[in-house]
Length: 114
Image (tube, rainbow, N blue to C red):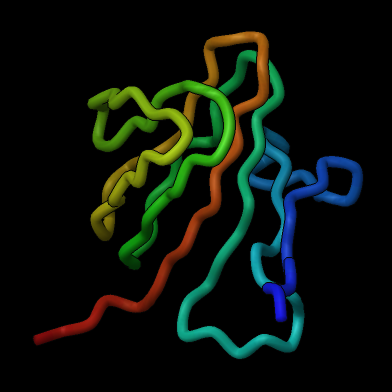
């Protein structure tokens, strides 16, 4: 018995997001009840995702390409296999300064108070 691939990013079916600065689509299929929200992010060639904030914790898992995640004005280099943590209320974005694809999966959730 093998695994079932339930999701793979497809730029042909993705939609414009963050004021048209990236392409995005759901990571998990509709109907799968996850305790978090999720989206694929995709930048093809030079560009920057619209900087934004939200009152949730978030991680980005980078799957293709090389670029930067910017959190509160500080740039961090990222590439395949890197996981970036975005704290609540931090101004953040993703930058692709190269000619290739930069792809990541984003997961965010309500802040869990101790």
